[in-house]
Amino acid sequence: MRPQLPTPPETALTAGLTARLPHWEEVYRDLHAHPEPAFAEHRTAAAVARELARVDGWEVTRKVGGTGVVAVLRNGAGPVVWLRADLDALPVREETGLPYASVESGLMHACGHDVHVAALLGACRQLAARPEAWRGTAVAVFQPAEEVGRGAQAMLDDGVLDRFPRPDVVLGQHVGPLPAGVVITRPGAVMAAADSVRVTLHGAGAHASAPHMAVDPVVMAACVILRLQTLSARLAPLTPSPLLTVGAMHAGTVPNVIPHTAELLCSLRTFDEPTRRQVLTDLRRVVCAEAGAQGAPRTPDIETYDSFPLTVNDPYATERVLAALADAGTIGRTLPAPLPASEDFGRFAAAAGCPSVMYHFGGADPADFDAEALAALDRGTLPPGTVMNHSPHYAPSDHHAVAAGIRHFLTTAGAWLANDAATTLSPHTD
Image (cartoon, rainbow, N blue to C red; front, side, top):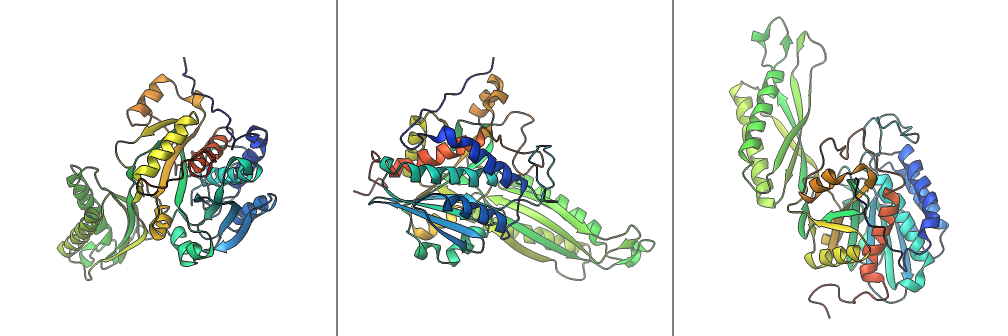
């Protein structure tokens, strides 16, 4: 027998939402079919602006930080709450088989950003439709280029904090392979810092028939990969353990030529700054030592790029978010440790000097989760065979994810904006 998750009660902010859900589900399907990469989300931004233009009260500004959109809705005196969604897709070929699968070759919304956009648009419509249920200022931030870790900073560099009402709190959410109606988060560090590292190894090319005339960068790369895996294993006892992965290797073009160079693309995820600095130092040491041992004619080039900060939730604001979600019928789970995935969401609150909360919510049909699967979630693990974000097979449910996302945005924003919300923004404010 499959357990039933509670049906969320209607609130002052969600009244009338059910009748509008088919429209937002269609918006999600349209966005899913037309993914766009980082800083090229022109169609997506236009769709956002078009939907907001149909709603009275929202002041809409496009081209913030490139392709970002910021919308402001003022409703009297009160807190300023930022709600953030991300716009970009991934360079992944979709294999879901959905009738609304991507029509763009080699691009896919494999991380659910299409859900985030549709959900925030739905929340914007509800806030405009229910002004009597809240007070303050809502700011909807549709951010470009989250997948490369540069979109939030681009908006900050474009003066987003000076051009729009500064936040008292910043709230963000991310869909994942959980049942709709479940939210996971934690106070403090909630998502890892991440760095992409490009390693270029220099050898000496030759004909494949004369390997003695070469310094083979392919062999060098293979040895470096094994060395880095050993380094990663030695870091395992740290809690949480840093993660170091070699995700790509590029070398050569034909089988009978030893190339001059080989390139490795690595992903490093850490949970505090001292560990990050140490692992990057260790990585450089290992790579350079292996290259030297094989007689490389040049020191390897090592470049760090597409870096993401540690995502840190304000403890008091997180408690407030979880309490509001529980009151709305959501099953909340506090994570025992940070997630190894990464986000650039935290840059907004860090620059504004205000609290922020990032939480992950379920976008799958609850009927797909039996009692054993739910028990796995309670243990902090996902059921075997779960399709994760960034997979070519990943797609949230159009019927469940969008509805859950809208309700969660409204619920968490309402913890500050609702007429009966407490006015304090932190344990230390009066």
